[in-house]
Length: 294
Image (cartoon, rainbow, N blue to C red):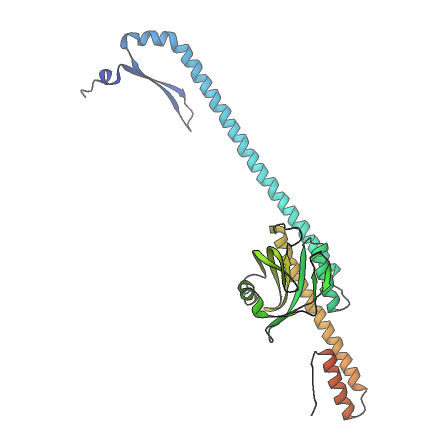
């Protein structure tokens, strides 16, 4: 090789290894050193270069130790956070189980509706909720108990709405089995069919098997706080438990109604009395407007 490095580089070049760590080796490169002064530089600067190398290695070791401590703290924080999340999840599930137990023995379905709406607000910490019952045959839904703008439980049995008044997301969720909880952010907030604000709006669908029979509508009108992952878990669990309680109570009520009808009919002495009693019972207990027996 005919390359004259002294002329091109302006002199000799020397390299000093400052740090021999396997992860990242560090070198000090000295260029443009005149050949006649190289020996003097070595004699006069060797100790200084050794000190520089030692200091560099100390800085690297301190930096690595700092990074290792930071990574350790991050791992510890993640571990503590995971433990905290698990404990909070367990506490939330215990609370939901306790609330479900408290409302599991109502006097009637109407009493169950009231207790559930109160429990979601007072025990589980949601701003407002209302329980809607679905009638797929009529393509409509009606209210039971709800919450007004002041956070007070109110009677909404007089309210009835067509199913098409729901948003598309809610209508699609009723026919889908993927999830029983649908949340829409920045949605209109309603009270008795009237818009009173904006926030998140949730539908907690209640099912008997695969068939929906109603839902809890919830929003954050009062405190305007975002819904958390823990609250979503609580709602999923509460919806499942409430559905079981509702189905059992409805069956009990139907059995009592059937027994009452049999007792009523057994007291009749003529065919005319039987027909009259059947019509009266159907109009009074089955929600039938008009009925005739031929």
